[in-house]
Image 1: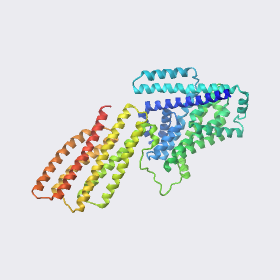
Image 2: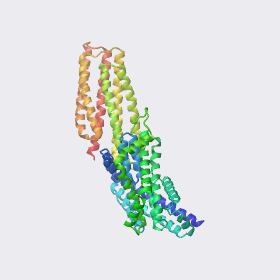
Image 3: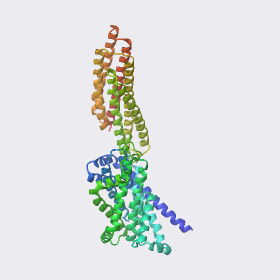
Image 4: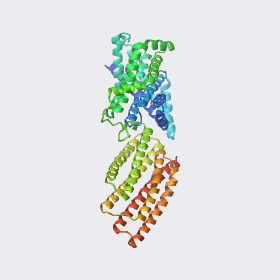
Amino acid sequence: MGTVLWLLARIIGGVGVFLYGMNLMSLSLEKTAGSRMKGIVESCTRNRVFAAGAGAAVTMIIQSSSAATVMTVGFVNAGIMTLSQAAGVIIGANVGTTVTAQIVAFNLDAAAPVIAGLGAAGYLMFRNDRNKNIAQIFVGFGLLFTGIVFLKDAMGFMGENPRIMGIIAEFDGRRPLSYFVLVIAGILVTVLVQSSSTVTGLLAAMASQNLLTIYMAVPLILGSNLGTTCTALISAAGAGRNAKRAAWIHVIFNGTGVILFAVFLQNIVVDAVVGMSANDLPRQIANFHTAFNLITAVVSLPFINLLVRAAVRILPVREDEKYDTESILDPRMLETPPIAIKQVREELYELTCLASENYADGVGLLTDFSPEIFVKVENKEKRINDIHNEIKEYLKRITEKEVSAHERREINVLFSIDNDMERMADNAFNIAEAARYKFEQGIEFSETAVRDMKELHSLVMDSCEDILRGVTELSGVYAGDIIAREYLIDTLEREFRERHMSRLNRGECSAGAGMIYLESIGYIERAADRIRKAAMVISDFKNNN
């Protein structure tokens, strides 16, 4: 009984340390290269080859094809990636994950504790965030191989047990029934640990102790590649139909690859990898894993449109289907803060657009009231408030993740802009309500008042255009123009107030009209002031980076 408990502890501990090491290494790699990941993802919009390259690159950074695929499902759900682009990324992700298998195939048993120790020492010594992240990469790398050492110890004990070896010998992988059982086992273990890389590490440990042959490893690898698709399916469960199609593309792609190899290519590839590394079974397993994903990717890449059509056939288009979600802030992106922040910027741009449109419509209602336009402004104001609250909550959730000092500053900037643009939208709605009151009371503005107000409004619209560019690029180059224009707007607003008081004293306008007019130009000036505050925050952020 004690021996069994020792064996279980060694296996569970080995898998746990392996998973923790891989997770720590991937998180640290992600934080080190996170700012580049936005560019990598954006590159996938060019063509299918770039999409596959982006998928491979991101997977190499985060060390998990499942995580990369879940991220892709999130992009599709957010409407910023088409199914064709997603298919390319998924294909590339499968290639990228083979790097982990190749790393695990190295025998670094003796070096693992040294690597982890040096990484830990560096983490304690360094003060710079980037250097600390690099040190954590080495800690994770060392722990990953330490987990392999634990697994090898457990496998070594199993290899000395005749009963266990007898059971294993029944599954040589060359008989149809044992082949099928091993494929199912590969699926189940991968679904259980949610990581095909962990299964590869387990196979490498078993191979090092001669517990399996290449013919046993092959169906386990194929089953693992099927099992890893379950993560994307689970992730897409609560998403839109297009996101579910992206997950099904992963299932179809991997399933087709498994059938292709099992029926046609397996023996050819096995002979090739054995010939390349005849005395190194862990390397043979890694090479087969690489060959499977690389060949499947090369064969599938020209047929991306067929993959998309197959996914659409599984989930047909419905008449009431909405491809565009109301919010692009997908919780899946929170695990990758740089991309989550990029999503906030896109949603913040949408909020700023809506606020600018409502401002323009609100001022337009002052001179040409339309009940239909007012309802449109009212509905848009509700949408703006919803986006504002979504952004605020999403940014709070990002701050709960591990983010760099630069990313934390950017999050603070986005918080501030979000508040300013929502306040600007409130001023726009106040203008619309003033216009409705003016219409209901039958109040008319004088030609001079209308001319002055339009002059003020024109300047604010120029600032709206500038702040839209500023939010898009987080660039402070427009701040100078916005600030100078705000000074002019303040000056004109005071001047127009004085002119109005003179008209009022001369009896050229009514007290009711005067009240609405003063209130309206006050809201216009306050809208401009909110734009100026947002521009100054952006400018300070750029100047301090």
